[in-house]
Length: 194
Image 1: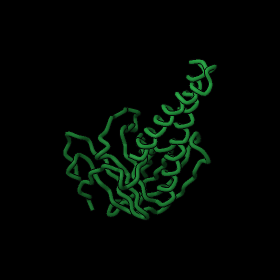
Image 2: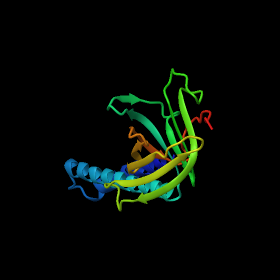
Image 3: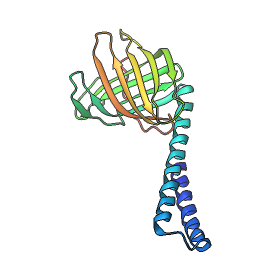
């Protein structure tokens, strides 16, 4: 909502600035006006990206975010589009919930997959200084009642992110998605095994 209001205010400012500029200086051509408009749009986009980046940095530093997956790449590289409502990693301080599910299947969690609740054993963040460079999260997750410690690496540019999970047996899963705050994430948590 804030982003929408921000964009709307920029459009209003541009609409007000164009007639005022044209009236004050009759020598400005349409080409120069288009250049100005392009410049203002570029500046507005950069500012919006920076605000989004600052928001994500705060979530990551507070260890309170949700990675919502849109696509899953299997161990053999096959791509699956997945439901973001059911495929996620939610991190809240030292606890985490990892869930994967495929629609149309019956799974341990009641929604076609498995839900693992557990604790973060390790959590490291390396943040980029600006929005055009990658930031990283490395964590080790210990699911309750299940053996093994999956290694999770999240690479993100702003809210767009990729999560790699490596299990003890060498199996790797890659998911593409985005980072959101716990309050903004629309997720459904299935029944945990333990």
